[in-house]
Image 1 (cartoon, rainbow, N blue to C red):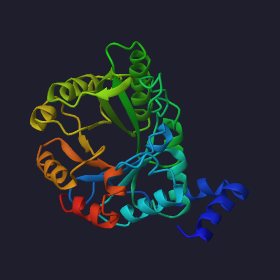
Image 2: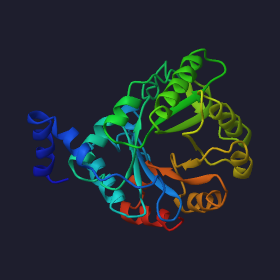
Image 3: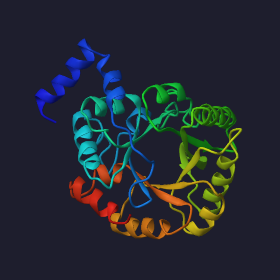
Image 4: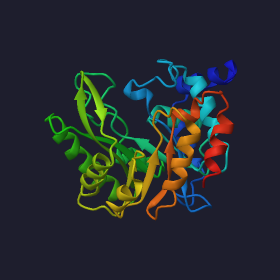
Length: 290
């Protein structure tokens, strides 16, 4: 990002904060949550608010906000990338930069489970709310719902997630729920990515809230994705996470997209920070899958 462009962002926030709401009101909204292919491809950028700044071996890769915004704009410039998932601060920057016209936008709702914290499993709702998402004209909210059967802080997170689903559904907004069966190993929260673990998380998440009419699931790739998809009738997007071999992961994503209720991909760090530095190329390679 050019220095003058970054300075203008800061100046607007300082002297004319109402410009954010005006940009939201003027934004051209997406006509559908999926693109022309009938699938969606959402670029994810809600990691920094949870203190998860590392990727590709660099623990501070996502620490430069101007650089992150540049990478997001590159991804969103591809017509096949039809949406973005982020916290309010990032989405507001993108609004001011004019990067969200015609895009599906999801606000990240709970970022309280800071990466590496003793209370990490306590995923409190410290981000945006259903009311704020509706006011900004966005399309839905996303929750991180980790389930640790040995940690009683899981129960409040499940309850809060159910309330968020209801609040979003009441306004006709999508609730994108990202569930994991999790546990502590050596003091670190680890997600269970076995087929059985992912199936169990899907079963639990599908039943949260008083209605599932507007609920989508965001799930990781598991060894047997047919069993994962069969665990629910809810629309499902496949998440990216930290990817060691992008080409192998692309093949896996392509196979998952053939399943009837897998409606797209929600990928972030592995495409925004590819090993070769070519964000546009990494995004285009994924768009080709759709």
